[in-house]
Image 1 (spheres, rainbow, N blue to C red):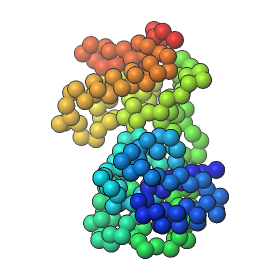
Image 2: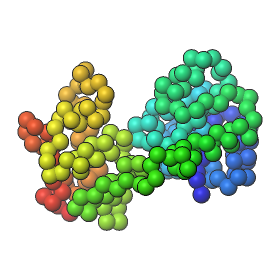
Image 3: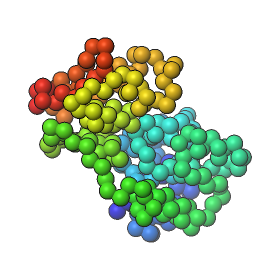
Image 4: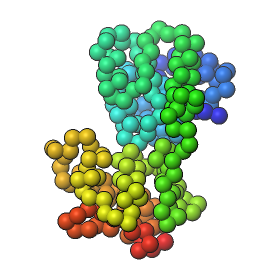
Length: 232
């Protein structure tokens, strides 16, 4: 059963959407703590998100940017704002569609179905899920999950991209410039320490799986996957 997460601070709208979407066989998770939306996201791992723009403390644009660091699941913005720039900002901040309030629940459902088809169904470009594997470690790029034996960790987009490139280049070295280009389209002004921070996070993910020494630093060149040298 596909899961829809609703991030809407008007309880009447949220309840109306939940009741309507539930009728059509979807599981609905409704966010109520708008200071910690990502906690709900990590717990629920939704297939699609309905996201209001006007939220307490942080707006929907902010939360969409946070989601996009970890997931490519469809995000449909809901908003009473009708300006063209609001729709442009929704798309620029990672949204896939925009619905103006007041709206018909049938229109919302039709857009949900359309986005789910594009992402996972008939219109999806990815017919078979990719799996990258080395030394028993499996990376699922579309899910952004890293697995070893019975353990699984959730990755951010940057972590998944780094591990993917390390696996693809194995046993060769993934150069620092290659990694920077993979992570950022224009890395001219990216601080050198930024990549180091991301590599540290990748190492922590391997450590959570019980693997140490998986990412080897090759001084002056870059990094190399070295799981066989790690303690498993």
